Length: 154
Image (cartoon, rainbow, N blue to C red; front, side, top):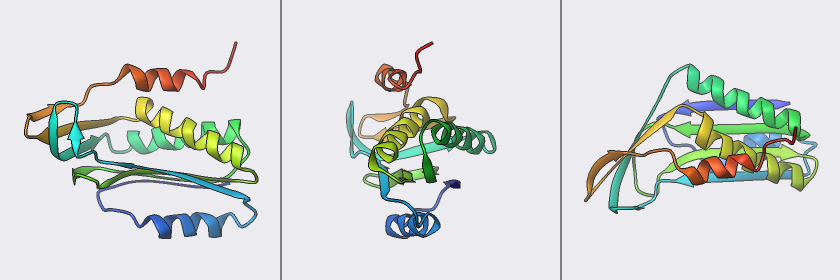
């Protein structure tokens, strides 16, 4: 299986990333992707920028583990994950999760699974800055609930 994970400050070219994943998995019948963006509106006002911090080494390891878990659960051919760090302005790309598989259902489900786990398990910290001042974003119960849908019955 093709697997590439990056944590980086620089922006990514979505088309180029998807083309690289497609070229690395020519037997794929499905390519699914999700791109997360910096919202311009926060819960408490206009957002001017977001600062994203991470724990180098540990963050990459967590992303690899999430991708490995997905590949054990679904018949994936490839995974490309990128998460940006640093100071990002409104509408900037934050995250890319892309999957390839023989069929669409596996690619869709694995992509959703990885985003739900990335939101709750990867060590990233986000600070929102805007007309309201600045504050660190707290974990949301809705993210944890989304992750729970993927738990296997015992």
